[in-house]
Image 1 (cartoon, rainbow, N blue to C red):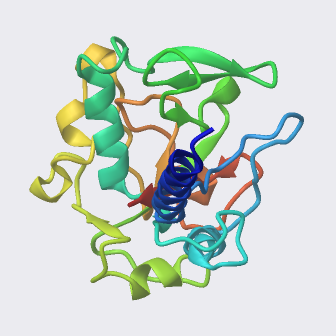
Image 2 (image 1 turned 180 degrees about the vertical axis):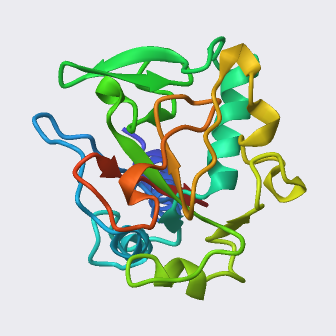
Length: 223
């Protein structure tokens, strides 16, 4: 065997492996896992939900050391979900979207399966999801003060005084009203999404951010 060829091959492998290692080290493998047998978190205030999502950027969180930008989903995030679901990339052809089953419970999704954006506030019709948004003209309270403090950040949306206000364009409120018979209920203070992916339903008793057994939240992650 030619020793020089063996050395050259080994050196080449070392270089390739080193380059591959460097490439891997520059990627993030953080992910959110839906664990079997678990349930959505309820009875959480808008303040706590907002902070929990921001805390996901910390190196001790479930995402680990990351350069991502997690935050509680905003009305704009929801709008993007609705429009992409309606596009040729999605399967939303009614007010709710198709259903997918997780842990033997059905949820609405933008793609008809678990790979889509799932509306966790849709199961049995009695759950709602907080969005980081509040209605203009309303006052801060102990349940939602963090959202008001972040008014000028990109992590909170200020909604118009009526559902079809110009400030709400792109947020799947007024402009999607009536699409595939999507409903709109515009309530008192903090944004809640319920049931429909396209419409906007159900402020309920948690409309002041106080939370309830049937109100959950979800993070959005920008990279």
